[in-house]
Amino acid sequence: MINTYGGRKLGRTGAHRRALLKNLATSLFLHERLETTIEKAKELRPFAERIITQAKKGRHDMVRKDVHDKRVYKKLFEVLAPRYENRPGGYTQIVRTKVREGDNAVLGLIRLI
Image 1 (tube, rainbow, N blue to C red):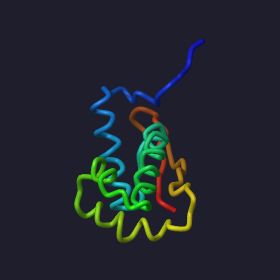
Image 2: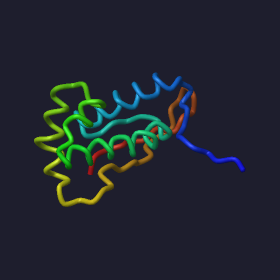
Image 3: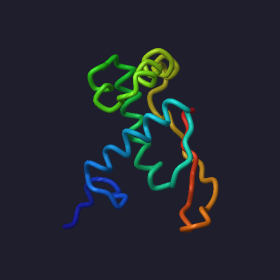
């Protein structure tokens, strides 16, 4: 029986993929919206929502592992965590926007709701 554990590889090594997700999440929290490929957005969604949930619980150590920007770290605890205090989950939304000319990749907008 073949089990498909894990997520998309995105053509990167494990360390590069984790760094990519951390950087995408940091940009998402800073600007509250981000345009990227649909595949990257689908991988980013659970990663970013997990960080917001940890911020809601007050887990500074867990958030600090994934967010290295001081402005974003402060924004998570002062703005985003109180905003989603009564929401049980589903903090992001993915909307398909266009197809990229060069490689025909489907682009989408991931944003905080």
